[in-house]
Structure formats: structure tokens, C-alpha cells
Image (cartoon, rainbow, N blue to C red; front, side, top):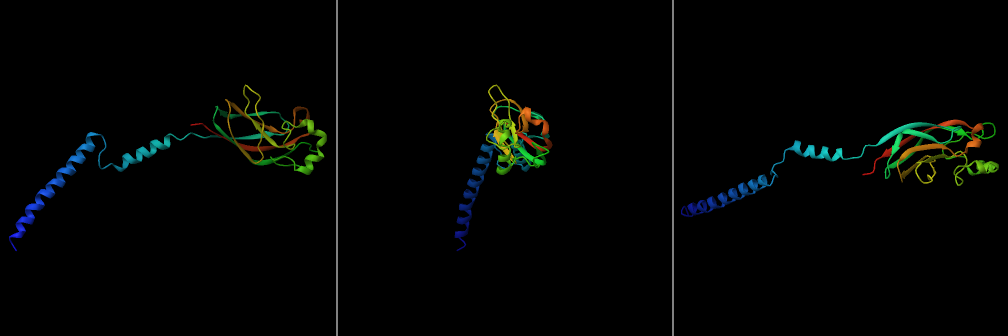
Length: 191
């Protein structure tokens, strides 16, 4: 049996040498094409940080919207066409008739109270929304669409401009209004 041992050893030497040559060849080939076989952890982390740097920067602003003023621009909410805009109610109350009507929030009056104000239908800026609803728009070249915000609304900017806010109560009807709402406006640039 001792005669068989040298043969096994002689067979293993060429196999081990072949594996070593193959490993050196693959490793050298990876270095030649610029892909080292053992990437440093820091290099991987740098690549992840680079990916994070590509995320859009969200602009956020808080704004107090008075009930006795027409359209009010949110100076820090400048948008470009395609940007995503979110307007969100934070706090506050207002009324379109401080002597006759209760205070309410951004959704405007409920159906019953809105019916009590049918005589003031001509005061609605957005005819389909109740009086007192928080409204937003992005003025542009064409007639700017007016959106009811309620507690929150998100829309995509159809053009460039500054976000504007107001109560759903037109110019000639603002004299008996009271209160204000605080809202946040977030602008996320389009990719």
C-alpha cells in the first residue's frame, strides 16, 4: 500500500497548482477591467451615499392664511412644472361671518351650515366647495385651477409659480370674516 501514496500526492500537486493559476488569472482579470475581487467596505458605503445624494430636496414652509384676505402667496413655495406640491392643514379656525356663523376648520362648513349661507353662493371662489373651505392654486399663464385643500391635498404643478392660498369667500364678502389657519406647504422637485 505505501506504493499508492506517492501517486496520490503526485496527482494532487497538479490539481492544486491548476486551481492556484485559475484564481490568479481570474483575480488579475478583474483588476484589469477595474473591478477588484475584494471591494473595500468604505467604497461600497461611498456608492450608497452617492445614490442618496440624487434624491430631490423637499422644500417645506409654514404659512398663516388669513380669512379676510384674498389670494396669499407662500413666498417659500416656489415650484417648477412637474413638481409635487402638498398643502396640509396644521391648526386654527375661521368663519365667513363672525356674528352669525360658528368657527370651522379647513373643510369649510358642513352641508347644513352651508345651506344656511345659500344667499351668499355668489361669494364662493370654488362653487363646488362649501364656504370657508381652504383653497389653493398655482397661478400661471392659463386660468389657474383652484383646488379645495380640506385637511390636505397633493397635486402636480402644471407650470412654474408660487403656491397661493385663501378662504373660499370672494373679495366683496371678506369684511365679516375672522380667524386664520396655519398650513404647511411641501414642494418636491420633479426628477
